[in-house]
Amino acid sequence: MYHFHIDIDGEIDQVVDKTLGALKEEGFGVLMDLDIQATLKAKLDVDRLPYRILGACNPPLANQALDAEPDIGVLLPCNVVVRGLEDGKVRVTFMDPDSVLALVDNDQVGTLAEEVKERLQRVRDRLAGG
Image 1: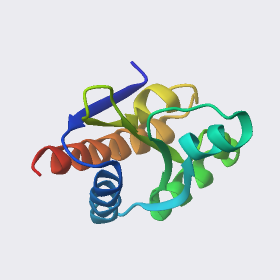
Image 2: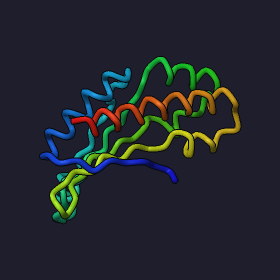
Image 3: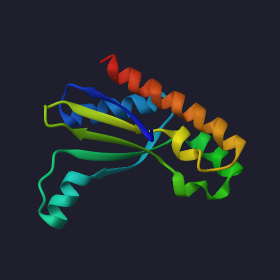
């Protein structure tokens, strides 16, 4: 599986804020925040449920990954999707770094992927706790 997720109650903006806070606690900053719902409405006049892609990056771990594999930037940052569901809940989906970074045949990158996954799982667990 290339991702893991959690479904929670709340408004999309509140869940995004909680997600940003939980990511920060694990050392991640967000390099980009793409509002796919707004983009598709503006470009294609398509109505969708809220859908945001957050590009999360932990600078020390990203630096180590770049040292180990200079072209790894094509697989960065770690995307986190926050999207509305039909039942009114909000799903937060995390890229699984183990799956994605397994594309790189480098033991150092594999070790970093495990650490990043553990941190993202703790973000998910924080969101589950409220």
